[in-house]
Image (cartoon, rainbow, N blue to C red):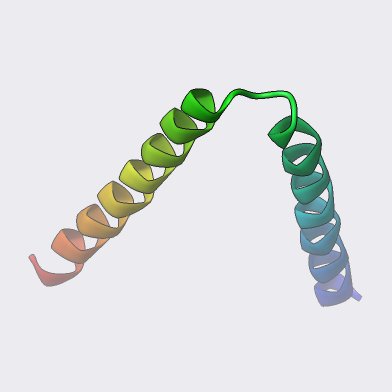
Length: 57
């Protein structure tokens, strides 16, 4: 039961997030979306690098 709750909660979170993103896509200008994309990519790469460094050292 616990795992089903985790799965349904995660699925609901992604559905909500995808819908919000879809709605905002048409309201934000292209330069703003580029800034959001670069910021998100930088954070993901940064967290990945930090995790890799923590793992090996």
